[in-house]
Structures are given as C-alpha cells and as structure tokens.
Length: 142
Image 1 (spheres, helix red, strand yellow):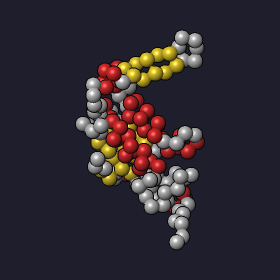
Image 2 (cartoon, one colour; image 1 turned 120 degrees about the horizontal axis):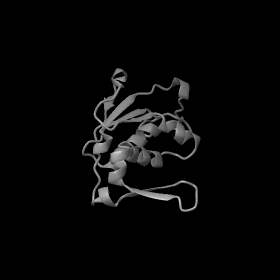
Image 3 (tube, helix red, strand yellow; image 1 turned 90 degrees about the horizontal axis):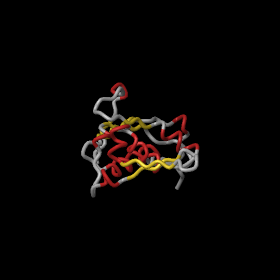
C-alpha cells in the first residue's frame, strides 16, 4: 500500500462556513480546527498546510453551558509586576465579540510556525454577514 502525498502547490483548497448561533463554543471550535488542519481529508499530513478555509459567522451568539458566561475567566499579563488582568466571558464578548472563538480555535492548532499559518485561513465574524460569498462556501452541519 502506498502513502498518499499531495504537494501543497497541487492541493485545491475549499471554503467552509459554520454558523455558530446557538451551538456550543467548543464544538464549533473543534470542527473548525479539524477543517483547518485538513484532518477531514485522506491526504492529511501533519507537517503541511493541507487544510481548507473556514468562515465562522454569528460567533458572539455561541452558547456556553453551566453558567460559564459569568464564570469563565480569560487572563492576560502585561509583562510587568502585578500586571495580571482577568476578564470574564460576558465582558470580553461585549468588548471583542470574536475573541473567544478565535482563542478556542487557536488553542487547538499546533504551536509554532504551522499553527500561525493555519490560523490565517480562518475568518470569524460576530454577525451573520461576511464578504466571502464569491468563494461559494459549503455549509458545515454540527
């Protein structure tokens, strides 16, 4: 049996769209990460960008369970002593509606050069409109 290997220049990338309205944040992020990595294809190679493009719409309407809207905390540090800042999910969604979805997907991608490249193939929008209609994205059902 021969291993299938497709060179990245010969690969045809497709566009997929995921509507996050009413869906669990983690479930949407897992599906997006799988498509970005290319794990849904038979020619998956862990060292290459064989994945497709992903558009996530209605990111601010993604659901959390167990009252995590008021319990989930995001931390960041300025680098200075005493510079730890904590912000709860509901405040972050008000300030940056796409951040929780982007942060969840980024955490599921590989760390390093490949992960940063894969992350550029994802577009996240807070509302239902997106400027990628010309790419004719296929809808993904969760």
